Length: 108
Length: 118
Image (cartoon, rainbow over all chains, first blue to last red; front, side, top):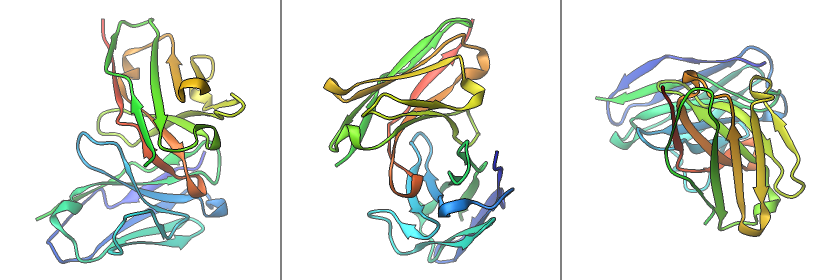
């Protein structure tokens, strides 16, 4: 099983700043099957990025993904108050598919 | 637009079973695998398994083998997840999700809270 470790656990930043969220895999994630989700309290996760770097429909270009192999990054430039949420990475390059434990983003 | 609507919250006693439904609309139901996941409080999502709505074929995470059954009714574009021998640590929000590009999930159902308590 591929274990995804996200860091930091919590990130506290101000509006307008840039957020950098990390996702490290215990083995190489094949076929670029790495995605990122945003989850707000009481809601289902929302797809942000798939295939490491492709934004899902309707996702603003402030959100970007990068990385390869075992190290992946979600970057949110120009933070807005509504970006306050928990962010998860997910892989399906190996079975079973797995999620990271999440990074909580707080907006000061 | 594509949408998944799940059945309502359930309360069960330990040892019982629960069956949750997930109705799809706005896209061709048989085209994409439909996955089930769950999320315990404060945890990341956990994958349970998938069903191929076209063939009815299934694949389950090893952790749930023997306890979970995924089915579908194509006539009403609805998928079902039944989990048996419930324990208190099965208490979670259960989601269905459509497998989209590059094995991502979009959309998700709104979630169904299952509470297992004596």
